[in-house]
Amino acid sequence: MKFSFFSIFRIRKHIQKKIQEKKANQDYRILSDNTAVLNSYHHIKYDMNPFMDVNHHEKKYIEDIIITYEGYFDQPYPVHYIVRYPYIKVKKRKEIVDEIIKRWEIDYYKMIDERLKKIFEQASFNPVKNVKRIKNRTINGYIIGAVIMLVLLKQYSFLQMIPVIGSFFAMVNKLLIYQRYYNILSILVYLSIIISMYLIIVKVYFDKVLQYGLTARGFLIKEKERMLKKFSPNVKKIKKHLYKLAKNYHVDRKYEISQLYDSKTVIKRIERFGRAVIYRVGIFISYYRTILLISKIFFFVYLGLIIYLIVALFRVNSLMFW
Image (cartoon, rainbow, N blue to C red; front, side, top):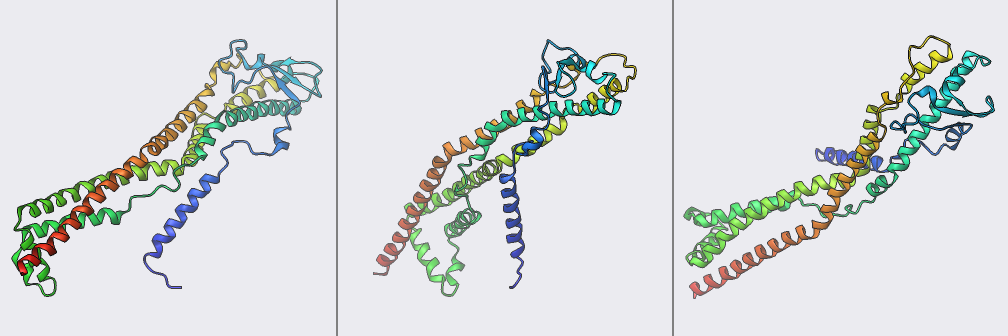
């Protein structure tokens, strides 16, 4: 198998396609379907999740959250009572702290997964897979056509001296003696430029929106990961504080829930980003046929004028010949 220079571009295109497919198949969920992990903390119940209910007014401090820990305690107790329970070793108390925080964290991520499920389902529905892309060679064809017609309008006499094709330029010069044909060819030059500019704008727009449409799911997953990294649950701070309580260290004051960020920020930002992406793709779909129709009308008008000039070229020269 021969390796050519153009093979590099084919390999690059193939790699990009694989990357897009990987993004499209990537699981949007933070938590996997590992039911063993999801169900491993069901022995812990609570009346408030500080990662989710930041604006809850009934509880002001982490220590005041009521926990039901089956197996060790026969009834619900506040967090500060459980982590300082003197009849359990410090090591076990720290494990209980880890489990309580882990339960809060898992439920927090489950809530995000559930809230974002709809937006990711919409992003997964891709109605623009088979959209006809505007090709560079089409645009180049109109530009080359404009240049050729501009040269014909100049009616250079030396072109008639070129072997083989010189007779063609002589025929064109005879045709352009008539003002109406000269005007039509002039119109074709301007029309070529207009169509080229229109297709360039459409191509840029198509490529941009298609990129959003084809990788909307990937964009959202990337944005979700960025947002979660920026607004990750304050696990370390809470764990450090509760560890001090478990070790019976002196703590100056309780940990206020209001110190935590508003967890709804992550969801709102991702949903807003997702709706913007889906909205752009939706607008594209609604105007897609109209945009293509305009380009087709331009093409048929352009083609019709060229055919008219070709017919006139042979007609005028045949009359002159006779």
